[in-house]
Image 1 (spheres, each protein chain N blue to C red):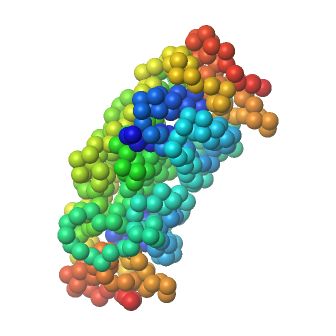
Image 2 (image 1 turned 180 degrees about the vertical axis):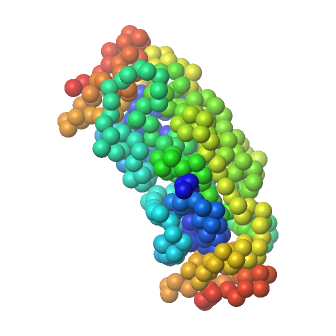
Image 3 (image 1 turned 135 degrees about the vertical axis):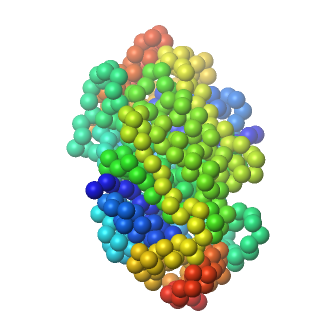
Length: 223
Length: 223
């Protein structure tokens, strides 16, 4: 079996990506990050999902990104806002997060002799982060092979973002076909003390809209 | 004063780069990584150097890279070899290390509103790592502005590797002109229990050759 590193956050997109990668016959090495996010509860979801969808290994890498501040997801002094839909990059943006995550995944892929890295990013129903856009992934793809021994030796490492051009609704429908149990997933940026989703942040709003458009009940417990 | 993020490891190149960046009038924000390297002693050097060369701040970011293994610098079951000079990428190569370091520096630069990142890599007297070559930095430069809010908003972030085409000897001469005290620096990949440099690994060999060619006494205590 070919090996793949799959980034999983515990949310809808990365869970669907893991199920998809597995269905394509890859041995999946799942990777998550404990980067100082306030919504640490997502890591519990990631653990359950890695187990449920047959990851060979699941690594949760500790990463002192949050201590740099600058994002509502890591800095408790910046409030996570309700979804605005104004098209601006929101304060939940974590500077260079996907670059950092993919870089560490790239290192692990080399160590594992894996030539494929999967990330569940979408540029359709998303929060407007610059590192979720097709041009970002294209640039990272070019970098990946210049940065590594694997690349220098001519064995290309491929970055796959299979949901990049899909709406959340289509992603959910695809996941349902693959048998994904979305009750395992967690999306909210500002869960309450009981760990329930708020229902109004960007991530909850996009999730709810996706389930509604897909005609699938959202198993999330809101509020 | 313009702000710059400067990556410092505690070695000759990054120390020279910090002194150089400071001499160009930048307010320097120094960044190092506790990534599970066996030669942790380099971080003590980095601390002293950041202080001596007037860094406004010095962050040492914890990063669980070492637990992935795959390198003699992080995995104690892989021996750090003597310098061989055979032109192959040595086992001290840490997969994707410079990509990871630059990515985190990129995040910090955005948070600080800094448009400049400095790294002391050289592609002349070096260990043959792929992520020290000009084509790598060119690709990272392209990525940096696609990956970030800063880039999307049209404020370019520049990646500077001012020593990229310099021999170690020329770097040392430049550092001496800038008043760098190289007794503060540490280069060895396999220091002994007393923290003394081995004198024979790639890093020691390249350092010794550099000081010899520069006609400058190497203040390192070997063996």
